[in-house]
Length: 89
Image (cartoon, rainbow, N blue to C red; front, side, top):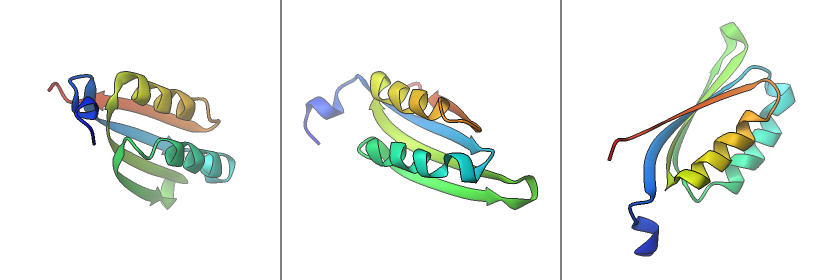
Protein backbone atom coordinates (compact mmCIF):
# COMPACT_ATOMS: atom_id res chain seq x y z
CA UNK A 1 0.00 0.00 0.00
CA UNK A 2 1.16 3.49 -0.77
CA UNK A 3 0.67 6.57 1.38
CA UNK A 4 -2.10 7.62 -1.00
CA UNK A 5 -3.88 4.30 -0.39
CA UNK A 6 -3.98 5.06 3.34
CA UNK A 7 -5.48 8.52 2.88
CA UNK A 8 -8.51 9.75 4.78
CA UNK A 9 -10.71 8.95 1.77
CA UNK A 10 -10.52 5.25 2.53
CA UNK A 11 -13.24 3.74 4.70
CA UNK A 12 -13.58 0.46 6.54
CA UNK A 13 -16.96 -1.13 6.05
CA UNK A 14 -19.09 -4.24 5.94
CA UNK A 15 -21.05 -5.35 2.90
CA UNK A 16 -23.86 -7.85 3.48
CA UNK A 17 -25.05 -9.86 0.48
CA UNK A 18 -28.04 -12.20 0.38
CA UNK A 19 -28.30 -14.45 -2.66
CA UNK A 20 -31.86 -15.70 -3.10
CA UNK A 21 -31.15 -18.03 -6.03
CA UNK A 22 -27.64 -19.42 -6.26
CA UNK A 23 -28.17 -20.77 -9.76
CA UNK A 24 -29.03 -17.36 -11.18
CA UNK A 25 -26.44 -15.03 -9.69
CA UNK A 26 -23.52 -16.89 -8.14
CA UNK A 27 -21.05 -16.93 -11.02
CA UNK A 28 -21.70 -13.26 -11.89
CA UNK A 29 -21.34 -12.34 -8.21
CA UNK A 30 -18.01 -14.13 -7.95
CA UNK A 31 -16.74 -12.28 -11.03
CA UNK A 32 -17.64 -8.94 -9.42
CA UNK A 33 -15.98 -9.91 -6.14
CA UNK A 34 -12.83 -10.90 -8.02
CA UNK A 35 -12.87 -7.56 -9.87
CA UNK A 36 -12.93 -5.71 -6.52
CA UNK A 37 -10.63 -8.08 -4.61
CA UNK A 38 -8.18 -5.22 -4.04
CA UNK A 39 -10.59 -3.61 -1.53
CA UNK A 40 -11.93 -6.83 0.05
CA UNK A 41 -9.95 -7.72 3.15
CA UNK A 42 -12.21 -10.53 4.40
CA UNK A 43 -15.08 -12.68 3.21
CA UNK A 44 -17.42 -15.06 5.00
CA UNK A 45 -20.01 -17.07 3.12
CA UNK A 46 -22.72 -19.19 4.70
CA UNK A 47 -25.26 -21.36 2.92
CA UNK A 48 -28.63 -21.28 4.65
CA UNK A 49 -30.21 -24.38 3.15
CA UNK A 50 -33.40 -24.24 5.22
CA UNK A 51 -34.27 -20.94 3.53
CA UNK A 52 -32.57 -21.64 0.18
CA UNK A 53 -30.30 -18.61 0.65
CA UNK A 54 -26.60 -17.87 0.64
CA UNK A 55 -25.36 -15.11 2.92
CA UNK A 56 -22.01 -13.43 2.29
CA UNK A 57 -20.40 -10.75 4.42
CA UNK A 58 -17.42 -8.77 3.18
CA UNK A 59 -15.04 -6.56 5.12
CA UNK A 60 -13.90 -3.81 2.77
CA UNK A 61 -11.28 -1.05 2.87
CA UNK A 62 -11.64 1.44 0.04
CA UNK A 63 -12.88 4.86 -0.88
CA UNK A 64 -16.60 5.52 -1.14
CA UNK A 65 -16.51 5.48 -4.95
CA UNK A 66 -14.94 2.00 -5.03
CA UNK A 67 -17.30 0.56 -2.43
CA UNK A 68 -20.28 2.23 -4.09
CA UNK A 69 -19.30 0.76 -7.46
CA UNK A 70 -18.95 -2.69 -5.89
CA UNK A 71 -22.33 -2.57 -4.16
CA UNK A 72 -23.96 -0.98 -7.22
CA UNK A 73 -22.86 -3.81 -9.49
CA UNK A 74 -23.92 -6.43 -6.96
CA UNK A 75 -27.29 -4.72 -6.50
CA UNK A 76 -28.03 -5.02 -10.22
CA UNK A 77 -27.82 -8.80 -10.11
CA UNK A 78 -31.16 -10.62 -10.16
CA UNK A 79 -32.20 -12.33 -6.91
CA UNK A 80 -29.48 -10.56 -4.87
CA UNK A 81 -29.86 -8.07 -2.00
CA UNK A 82 -26.90 -5.95 -0.84
CA UNK A 83 -26.43 -3.45 2.01
CA UNK A 84 -23.34 -1.71 3.35
CA UNK A 85 -22.31 -0.01 6.59
CA UNK A 86 -19.20 2.01 7.39
CA UNK A 87 -17.12 2.62 10.49
CA UNK A 88 -17.30 6.19 11.78
CA UNK A 89 -13.52 6.56 11.75
